[in-house]
Length: 398
Image (cartoon, rainbow, N blue to C red; front, side, top):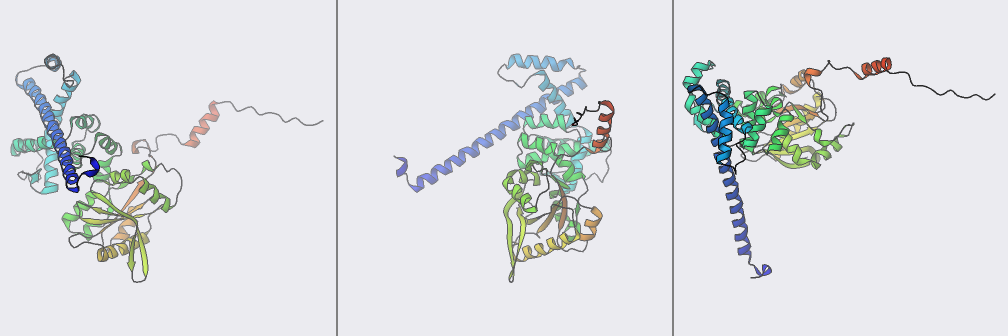
């Protein structure tokens, strides 16, 4: 049968089979990864338990690694360093501190459920002994379910780069939920996604404009600042140029925004009677089930920006919002903001609006600010150390 003579039914059938094969391969890879991670967990747990109950020393790790390599020469994962990581992997994810963070996370996100498993209330008591009695077996199983959904290479990087249990839990959950590749995970860690999404103070009126459960989700969606270094801009620009750069690197921008954002359009047209209005960037958030409008500002935040966004959201809710959609959300992305000014500008707005800064170039870490010499100080020192440049004498005519 010649390709050009294939019927539409066959082409459809072929497409369905290809899709099924791809799905099966993906599921097989996930299942293999799950078994591998659980194997490493069991090896790490076995080492720790034997060291505790049988008094084995640290030398057992090197011995076990050598014996496993001899028995399974075709497997490259039993180096001494990797077996040490298996032990570390089990220890770091079964400590009272990590489990405590898991309890707090499940209570914050789902009341009494974590990854589909019920967990008893701790009443806010963070005593490790009580925690260990209340949720040991079942919570450990819930944590194991989470870590088994994350590839081993990701775990290695997390153990190297993320020591805070709360941050580790954040990156584990995000990787498991959104399928981050290792490079995406590393970029998120480098860009301090956890700090910007969870720890840093955010400027918005979500708690005033949305129901409590939705306000919490919207707060989690918003970052205090967005890292736009990937745009390669290091000079003043117009708002249109910023918008064009973001669109040209839309995939990177969506990764920075966070998963769940679906792009709808730029300069999205809204009509009210005989006038037209345009939203800079319009997205739909799959998990919030809401339109999210972005207004780009190259300068600092001004109170009138909030009024303009509030107007846009009224139009979006009236003309574009679907029957099952939640209230539209606005994000004003600006170069600088004053949190007190933002608070006063948003407190009377009926629509949910957030204000965030963007960063175009890597900034100096906070712990080094004020501790390094300024350009002027460096220049003064250079003048003291280096000899003055010789100048040529001008020859004068006799």
